[in-house]
Length: 306
Image (tube, rainbow, N blue to C red; front, side, top):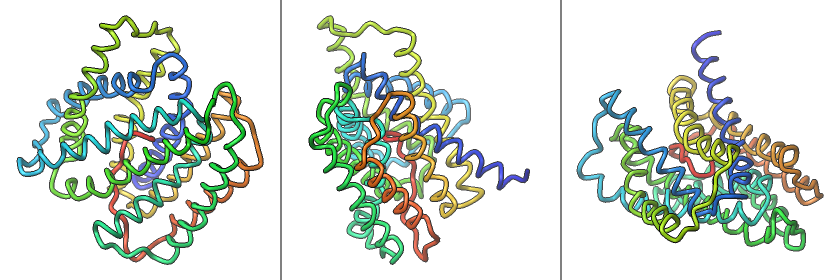
C-alpha cells in the first residue's frame, strides 16, 4: 500500500473515531454535567498538546495573532462545547451525528460573507438538500422525546448553535493556520479556554457536586480528550498533506453514518421515519458537497463535534 492510500486509510479511521464521539459523549453525560465534561476534556487535552509542543520543538504562534485567537477560543472552543454538550445531553446522539451537515452549511455561508468565497453550484445544491434533511430531523423530534432525550427539539437547536460556532472556528482558524504551526495554534486556542474551564472545575469540587466516576465514565472522558482532540487531529492533517482536501470530503461521510449506527446499536436510539428520511437527505447532501470544486472552503479541523 503506497503512502497516499495509507494516508487515506488514516483519514477514514479518524472520521470513524470522530463519528463515535457523539455516542461516547452521550454515555459520559449520564454521569458528568455538560459544562464539566467540556472542562475536563480540555483540561486533559491541553497538557498532552503541551507535551507534544515541547517534544517536537514547534514554533510559537506569531505575536500579532495571539490576541485575535482569544476570541477564536471563546467562540470555537468554549461556546461550541457549552452548546454542543448541552444539546447532546437533551437529544439523541444519532440526531447530533446526522446534524453534522449543519457545519457544512454554516461554513459555506460564513466563508461567503467573511472571506467572499464563491459557493459552487454543487455545494449550493448540497446545502439546500442538507437544510431540508436537517429540518425534517428537527421537526420530527418535536414530539418524540424519550427518557434519554428529554427535549430533542431544544437539544438539536443547541447543537446547531454549536456547529455554527465550529464553523466560525473553521473559517477564521483557517486564516491563522496559513501563517502558524497547527500544533502551536491548537495549544494556544485550547489553552486560553482554560480561563473558563478551570473555575468550572473548581466550583464543582468546592460545592461538593463533582460526580463519582465509574470506570466507563472515566474511559469515556479520556477517550474524548485524547482520541478526537489529539489522535484524530494528527491522522487528519497528515492525510490532508498527502491526499488533499477534496478526498477529505469523501472520508467525512463516515462521520454521520458511524455516529448514527452507534447511537442506534449502542444507546438504543429509536429508528423513526424522520430519522431515516432526514438521514438519507443529509448523507446525500454530504456526497454532493464532497464532489470536486473549482474553489475550496478553508479547512481546519475543529475538535468539538468531532
